[in-house]
Length: 112
Image 1 (spheres, rainbow, N blue to C red):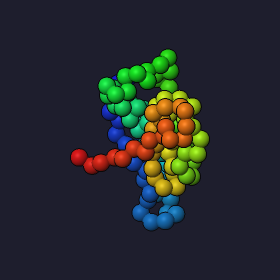
Image 2: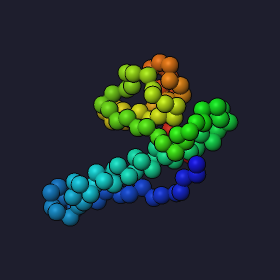
Image 3: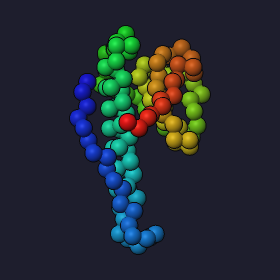
Image 4: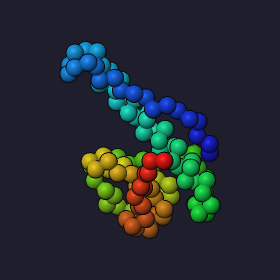
């Protein structure tokens, strides 16, 4: 699965609070959802291309289960490659197995 480069959609916040020049809430959160969907897809495609993950390919290659919560994972992943987003702490976890909570691995993103 190859992801197409997509620019991150910028949320317009306006000139000052509640001045009516920024994106409406619905538009802003639609952009947030599209940004996360693209990020999840791009990360999964990149990680799945690594030789170490060759054994985790399955019939649902194009499906990335995503969980968004206000805390780290507390239950085992349901599928290899699933993503858990800890919105409260701004952390992302990737499922590398399905046996236990320990199969969630926190991703550490570094700037080039």
